[in-house]
Amino acid sequence: MFYYRLKKSKIKTKVINMKIMLDCLGGDFAPKATIEGAKNALKSSATLNLVLLGKEEEIKEGLGNNFDPNRVEIINA
Picture 1 (cartoon, rainbow, N blue to C red):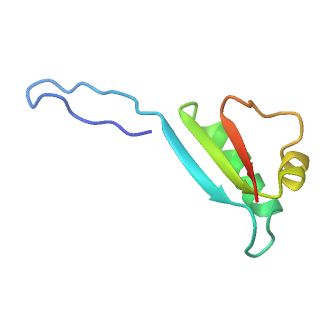
Picture 2 (cartoon, one colour):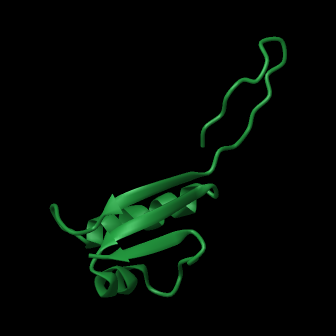
């Protein structure tokens, strides 16, 4: 979560929604390790949205049925 100061005299915060793209195509232990990390990140932040890039079937299998399609976008590559 990101916060920023609006005025010097009074500290006010605003939550900014983030969208992050993750490459699930390669790397050590991919795509399993990347998908597990994505699931952990989604649990830890309510303002995080992810775009997962990779083989759609493998990503869906790794995510299971416990993901919110409003927060996770899958791009088949």
